[in-house]
Length: 154
Image (cartoon, rainbow, N blue to C red; front, side):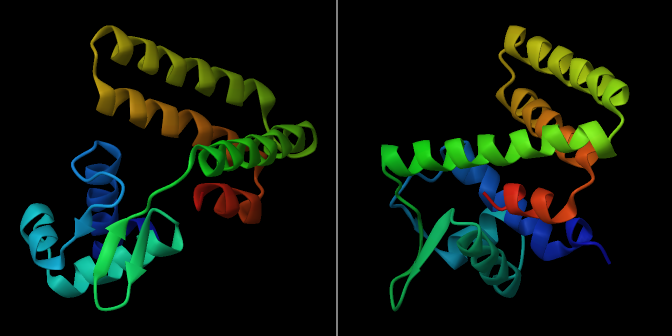
């Protein structure tokens, strides 16, 4: 079964969304019991989802204190965005030899239209989804799975 179909992955995405939307801010404790109720999942699924988010760097585990939303310095955030931009540029360069550039441009224009409409409607969720789809399209068209995995883990 693909990862994106598993319950753990779905729970992880729900928790990630709560963090990204600001329901939990950097430094907040992520109580398993609270998350069980908020995302409608078992403690085992919540715990595994938190471990995946820890691997991705969004949360940290402190022994005997549980999971917390990771605090990042401005420098760390800048460094991550710069690294992601460098890796995504590599994906774009790979399109010269591996990808369908015309198809990608059409797809990116479609995602841009979705994001423009979301901005007009002040729909943060739709804009975020459009942005993710935009960048994922570049990675999909580049057809470099190890590079795609590295970028998505950021």
